[in-house]
Length: 234
Image 1 (tube, rainbow, N blue to C red):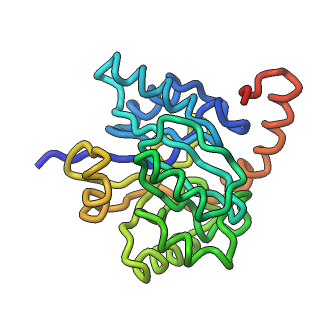
Image 2 (cartoon, rainbow, N blue to C red):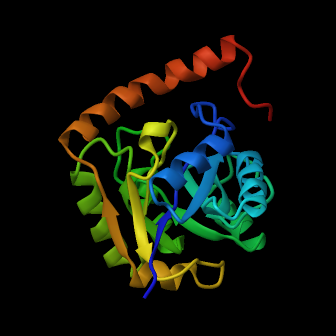
């Protein structure tokens, strides 16, 4: 039986704290054996659409799930299979409704990485999990292993498949966390494939330590890109 590494959460330079072009992200993912990758920039699908076009033009590149990591009033949620922008700052329910009205699936990222900017708020965590199709239990930028165990418990409590994503912003982070599935997913098969797949990651003590440094670097990256005029236009 063939298998595929599916990485459900990644960023390009169309995110303010990302530094890879869509092509660089896909090249890095190919080098790390990722067969299918979700491109989920902050509050825009522009990077995802560019990556999708590149992937469709070159079959040697990973397949692309276009998406968006959307800032809501309760924290971030990801829409998968989304090809048009959604306004940020909506309520959690409004954001989920907007994702679903566009035919997308809802993916809850890093629900217990409480020191991370954008993590869903404690009071909205259970509601967000219940509204989601998939809960991320391993995030490649996690600051420690405890969050993964708690996220797995949240997914189990609400009967949701367990997802994983590298949350890569830099090339070195690509392919750190993924789900091994039996075939290339579509919008209709993704949830079932993730539910029957297995979460894998390569996070070790050094990686968690490095993630603390990368989190501290993120606002500096935004400042530097603002000063150099390289922030994406909205």
